[in-house]
Length: 151
Image (tube, rainbow, N blue to C red; front, side):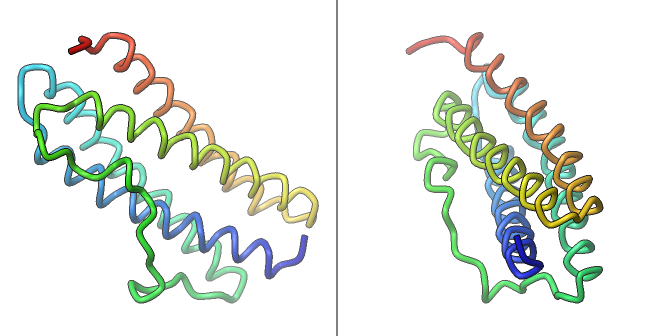
């Protein structure tokens, strides 16, 4: 892997984290119903963690003499995490979170492997640190999915 490939992966992850922040925040605001509260609280807490991930990635880009991208570089990809029309459809949000976390886990595993190949232990450490958080989020939402009532 080259530094350009590492910075491309960092940039992709940075933009993904910011999209996740937007979608988690929106879903935490719009969900309704008695079954929504715990999921909303988790999403709200995860917003801060995902924002911290974006900050870490942006700082790593800066250390590699690159700038994190601005909004003009952004292209939305998380269609499954869009707020549901039925604001009581908590299950669709849970499923969307699981898909987003699966994508994030794949991204950070790829980034860690690429950084290892490029002998870039700092980027590898950033990727592994964020990967641990994403796997914890996935586990939490997998639990929500198991407990959430089927309609």
